[in-house]
Length: 152
Length: 282
Image (cartoon, rainbow over all chains, first blue to last red; front, side, top):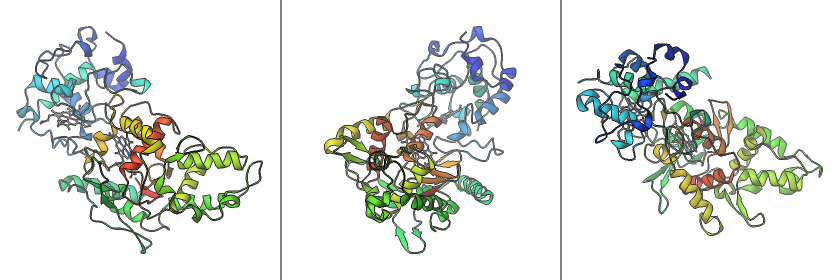
């Protein structure tokens, strides 16, 4: 497995993350079908509680930058660039949500939403992010586990 | 400062709970010192991708807006005062000051509204910073100022102030046509790990909240801008740099051809708005 995971995850989170790196599907090996990704990226069940933290963290998912989420009233600022994620899991299958997280552009053509598990995003990335995905495979699975709790 | 930060925060929460009308202050009027009325919206120029132009002032909280409505409350004016002093202070091997060649700053009335523009003698696109540094080096025999240093932003503020209320009218054809195209390309190119172009935020999403920030059209008619965040005047290129870093992109250098081109393109997107510099932003 590529060492980039280690560099990206703050130590506190690292402690919570699975070490089953060898089993991870690399960002360029993810298999899409119609924008959806059926297989887990890690083979390790996602941790919804950690996913909730990654979702809110400005340094990690920062999903709140663009999405309102009524499940997080404790967070004061919810952006409104994208749709509210209330009930997202009632609108999308798990595999579709994984696909949206890994590479949103496969589902929404030309979307502003970043692709969270992809290494060739925009040109001129800052050096420290070059060749790195925004989230690790396990963080994607964790956010996914959290998203599946958002039912109407 | 504390109360300001606090009121900005409540403003954000309020906006959220109200579901947010497209642009909060769209009908607010920017009157400075109770006497100078500056239009904050304008018809989009021909070929513009925007339906209408809005000054960045429109998107700020009521408290931040108020600071720009009185020159005594506008912290940017402190730096204008300092630049007033620098204006008539001789410097460099020629022992000359700006005043020796240009008289009063008022002699630059209207200039800012046309910047950046083609300089025939130099054979390149010039920003206000270029003119200032060229004068310092060539005519005063002094060191050039740092692009976004306090002396430079103070001087660009003093000069911009002489054009306050003048309608932005930046030329995009003739010798600058290539730079215009280059700037346009940069504006629409997705950069950085977050994979976004200027247009994703400032064209497609102005008027909405991106977390705690109310997105504007990213206009530069109010520059240099005093920001509460860093308590100083910020140059146009400094702002571009900040936005690029936020999307985790390696910014171009201040004063680079890329940022000159981008400044020309962005300035021209604001043709029709009026010069407000120095503005106040969060």
